[in-house]
Image 1 (tube, one colour):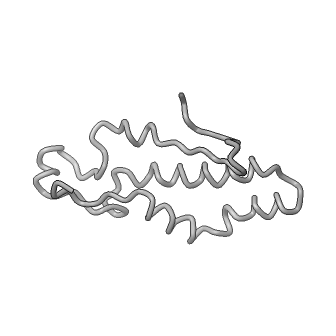
Image 2: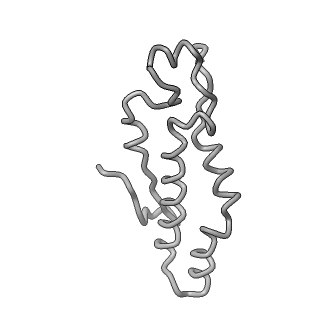
Length: 107
């Protein structure tokens, strides 16, 4: 749209979560064993994904780098970061059966 490159934050995050399956799946296992509540397991997954996604912003190795003209205008090659406001407000919410269990939303 408008000649701008795509900036998919979700796709690199999904790849990361898939590649680090054992790191977050342990909480699902604990839930199934009855040693942790579902909302805690979901919160851990959401928190891990959200933390990684925040790291995608501004990383030219995870996103298509800015065009040289953009780098010259901004003074840096930080895709999706001008002020950092979007990255700083990135949040998640977990739910099951339509009930919100956890949220990192500030509002």
